[in-house]
Image (cartoon, rainbow, N blue to C red; front, top):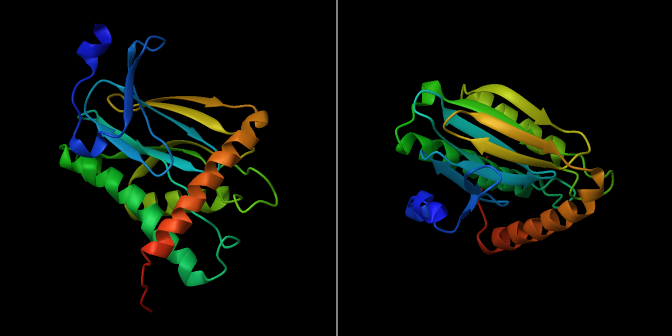
Length: 210
């Protein structure tokens, strides 16, 4: 009964996000998978797991409105063409950040008050095409610097997959570094996501102009 009463309605664009009552945290938890994001003004938590992917937690500290995204940029090994690589970054990295920030602003947040915490970008292997942690880290840091959004906390790189639990109302994050034994599982998930990116890019090409 408590869970049903606490699951407040969300905006239509977030209907596909899994949200459920978590007895361990005594709160509603929304799960964000690769390629997704979630923004809320409710008193709830946002959860994600990260390997090479990066998650940006962004919020307005005054109003307690914020959200989290989860994205992965393919690297040159996947597509040697520079323009193809750049189009991936524009389409998935910029999209992930713009959608997160714009949805916070649409709920009443102010750009000049936004703060960020960033996580992920693990270096999973030395030989796999999934070796994209550094590219993701560089992208998110440069993006936030360009947008003049302060990064107040980060846990990036290293060999560890991570779990992130973000409370947008307060800006607090609970972080767990997972055992390197979980790398194989995370690589499988990221490989599946990369295949989806390639398939979508081939169907909907982005034309770049010099």
